[in-house]
Image (cartoon, rainbow, N blue to C red; front, side, top):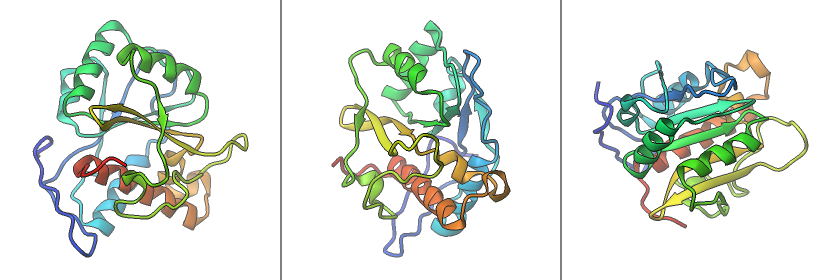
Length: 219
């Protein structure tokens, strides 16, 4: 299976085709439940394969921040509800990965925020999370999200925010905050979200993957 080299074709019908590739979940230290939302990536892969002619493996891998295998994946998913801790070796490896081929999607499952901001500062001391405008490519490349990041799962009445760390004019880390996209990606019987909400979350996930494969412009 080709993981690094793949062809991305955007057709007029909004379908896509590329060599098969795999996604991965980040297994981090600190005590947080990195294993939350176990069916999310499988369902996102199914949606993208069926609706956009992608060829993503439904089987995802589990990878640690300090592993050299990290560089085999174009997309790393990180989620949970609690503490996150990156070691020095984690920081050095993640920085190299993100400055090179990598993309980290942090999906706050509610409770990560205070930890993730501190730990990402270790990786990029000079970068701050910025809120992406609703006109950004990531909200408009395949499916249109006129109001930006959709709200999927309610916790405390705060609006959903799509935050990003930008390196050389490209998103290297997308932080879906107060949205809980992964809850919408999970099997329908887990959170029992209305079907239209689940589809919104899956469409947003497809946009994220499309951005990684074809980041043609930064808005």
